[in-house]
Length: 640
Image (cartoon, rainbow, N blue to C red; front, side, top):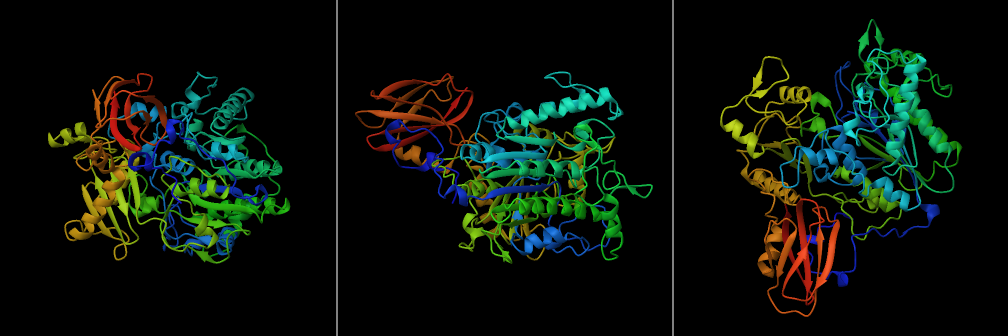
C-alpha cells in the first residue's frame, strides 16, 4: 500500500469536523510476538551490475548479482534462501540523499532540514545532493518504530544529520575537541579527543530515534580528519552490531547497520603490495580513535586475503567483499545463537552505485543497487521479484511489517509486505522517479527519460556564454556539473557521452549502457515518460523545475480551484489571508498543510469574508483546505 497522502490535495472528503490532525495510528496489526526483528545492512557505493573483467579497480556486486569474480558465499546463501530483487533502484545517487529516503520513505527533494533549506528556501529550485539531512523534529523510521515498541539501533556511517559538524576535527564548538590531521591516535591526549568526539556523535544520532548507537562514522572516513583513521574497519562496526543484538530483550528490534565499504579510500588500493586502506590496515584504528578490540570471533584479515589469493578465478581486489561477507555471517550466527534468526528480516543493499562513475548521475551505474531479503519465517527460499522497487519503499515496508498503520503519513514509497510474503507478484510501481542536482528522471522496466534543467540564474549565465568551473585546474565548462562537488561531477560527465544533454531517452532493453539517446527518434515513448516525470514534479509544490513545472501549477490543485471558486487574498501574504466563499454556508472550518502533508494550523469561521491569521507559520508554500456545507475547497497559498 502507498503511504504518501496525496489526498490532502485532491480529496473531496470532509475535514472530520476540523478536529483531526495529521497523525499516525500505531495500531498493531499483528500480535507483538509475530512482528519481525529487522536488520538492515547497507554498503556504500556498490552497484548491482556485474563486471566481467578479472581485475577491476572499482567496486563489484555480490555473487548473487552474477559477478563470477567475487566470493561471497554467506550472503549468496542468504539470497538463495530468501528473495532477490534484480530491479532495485535508489531515487538519488549520493549518500546523504539516499540514506534520507531509506529512513523516511520520502524523496530527498522533500527534505526540510536546516542546511538544505538554507541552500534552497521554499519556492526555489532544488539541487539534491549531499546536502540532505534528517529533520530534527519530523517523524522518521526509527522514531515511528520506537513508538510501536521496537528497540532501535544505529551502527556505522551516518552522513544523514548535522552536515555543519562534518569538519569534526576542526571544530571547537558544541563540545568537539581538535587534533591535527597527522596526530597519532595512540597518543593519550589525541585519543581522548577522538573518543570525546565519537561520544558526541553517538548522542546526536540517538536524538533522531535510536535507542542505541555505536561505532559511528559521521560521514566518509576522511571526515574523521585524521590520516591514521582514514581506513576501513569492518570488525569495529561488526562488534557494535553484535553488542546491540546481544542486548535484545523481549521487544522486537530494528538495527540500521551501515558499512563504510567500499566507498573511498578504496579498500582495494595497493601500496607496496598491501591493501593499506582495507584488509592490511591497522585494526586498532576506529572512528573512536585507538581501540585494541577483541575480534577473536572473526576470521583474521590475513586469512581472508590468503583465501582469495588461493582462488585463481577471483579478483583479489574484491577481497573486501569476503571481509564484509564474514561480518554478515557473524550477525547471522549471533541471531541463531540467541534463537532470533527465524523471525528476523535481514536486508542487504547499498546506498547507490558507482559502476563506471555512475555516482552523481542518473545512469544505471549510479541508480541500480543490489538488494536481497532473508526471513525464514516470512520469505520462501529461491524467491525473486522482477518488478521495480526503490529505496523509498523500505520505510513503509518495515512499518507495515511492524504493525504500524499510518492513517495519514507523508511517504512516497509503497509497502513490499505482500511482495515478500509471496502474495503479490504484479508491479508495485508503474515507473520510478529520480532526482539528483540539476537532473530528474523517470524509468520503466524498459525505458528511461532523463531531463537536465537549470534554475533561472544558472540558465541566464548559460545563455550569456558564461563558463563554469571544471574539476581540472585551468579548464572551464560550457555547462555546470549536476552537483556542486566538482570531483564527482567531473567523473560523471567524463564517462557518459550525453551527460549535458537536456533531454535523453534510452532503450534499456537493447542499450543497457545508455550509449544512444533516442529522444528525437521515439517521440511516443519520450512524450509518455516526460509526462510521467512531470506528474512527479507536481507533487513538489513550491519547487519549480524550469519549464516542466513552475512550482504552482499542480494539476490536481488547479482543477479543484477552478471548480471551487474560492477566493483567498492577498496571496502571497505575510500571513494574513482573507477567505471568500463561492456560496452561503452555516459554518466552515479550515486546515493548512505544508507541502508534504503535515498539518500546520486549523480553525473554524462563520462569515463569508473572513480573515485568518497564519503569521506564526514560516515562509513557504502551503495548501489551504476549507470545508463548508460538506464540500472541500483548496487553495495554494504562499507566506512571505
